Figure 1 (cartoon, rainbow, N blue to C red):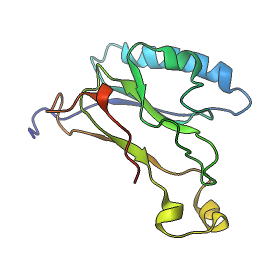
Figure 2: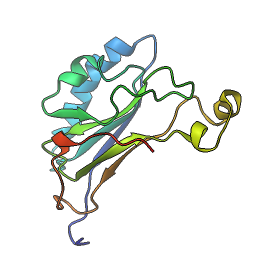
Figure 3: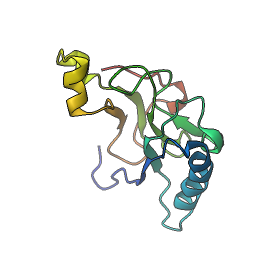
Length: 149
């Protein structure tokens, strides 16, 4: 890969209030659009964090044109009972996405009890892989399937 054209991006890290999730998600679509159109000429905007909802309840954020999420129907909490976390970006603008993403289940990987795992975090790490060069040779993100690690 060419180091003269590195993959650059704007990152929005969020944590919604569980009591205000609907309202916050319906403002986060505006935040995403403002960052995407802030005049910096950056085409890649990645929004990630603890949304406190699953991928089917993203409200207006889930309606942003070309938005895709990397975690679908997979628990992201340590108890493996709910999906809270996700990584979202435009499938059209962020062609550097390799199609690989998932939830890292450290609890199973390190054979931890629920109590032990909860001392680390009540969330499992989520991840997504991107090429290091802008518009590098990639597969279509829309055809990507999440990978569990």
